[in-house]
Image 1 (spheres, one colour):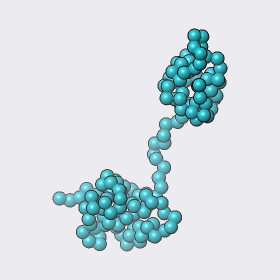
Image 2 (cartoon, helix red, strand yellow):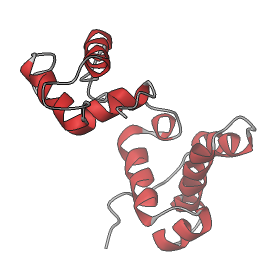
Image 3 (spheres, one colour):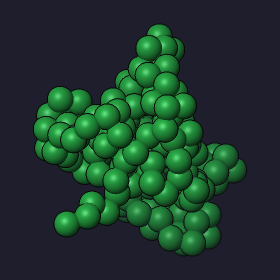
Image 4 (cartoon, one colour):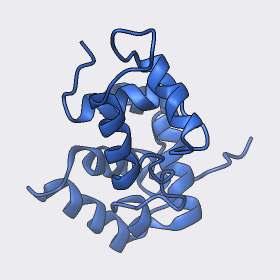
Length: 152
């Protein structure tokens, strides 16, 4: 049965992988990926199994498989280089102005019938005042914690 992702490094790629391993500035993750590619290389003999390579490199078998896949699809430069994600993380829900309004609300007087603000009350009031279209307790809690504010 033929492997889905067979690794056959050229001499230049093999040299590049060894250079990555030998460099003192190389991060641990890049070293591990370079080691994985060298161990998967079928050009120098029969490679070990993914589980053996994972054990020797102190990674999971999934990491070995993903490294092989990345090499076959993207080449060695992209496999052994830092990559920014294609889809960056979601933008922050609470920005500077909204954060300031939530903090001002928390520092103000609590609603009638309450002696102090709770995170739940703040979350409800933030939505009521249209500071945010929807706000969970966790969003409000993280906003307050960011500035070491306590509701007690």
